[in-house]
Length: 256
Image (tube, rainbow, N blue to C red; front, side, top):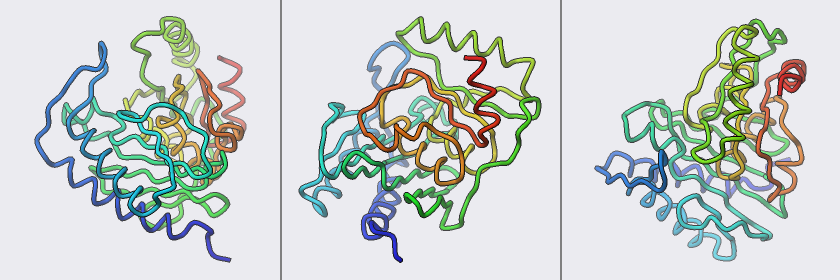
């Protein structure tokens, strides 16, 4: 049986690759708030993808980080982050990407993440698996915390409670795990877990464009995520654990 949303998948893969070419252009950086920046190329990619989606699917609804942040209920919905890891992008750090999730009646059915510098196109299809450049990918099988590579999301720019909780987690993990890393890009962290490069990602975030595409990718690669978050669009979490194995996920949860 063919994948139900194959036409949407083929379409958005092509458009993301086209949009990524805009990132080679010069850009202007603006500070949205302290320690949080946006570039003119964020807006350029967002505009390109929005116009392409609405030209092909005029009844669909879009939620995006820069211009359409209001969460909406819709039969068919696209959630996008035009550049995830903008600070890395502005500094020439090769850890950023373009990511989208396609949501139907509240459930994430498809996600696409393009890791631009490495030219790796990640795709997740509900109940059909996860892929990198059309090759299946799978999470790792490590179950030992002492051998685990754990990545953490960025600290909040405004919420000291969340930052304190992350600091406590670092203290709890630093002598228990193999390595702790902060990459500064949710999509990079998610593809690393999905592809078996790292074992756990812990993020403190509540914007769906940050986590929805990656959650489906990890889930379809055999990892452990909060099922409710990919089944019911609009739910919020302030802290989530994305794991390669159930055993590791449970061990991290005990330290939160």
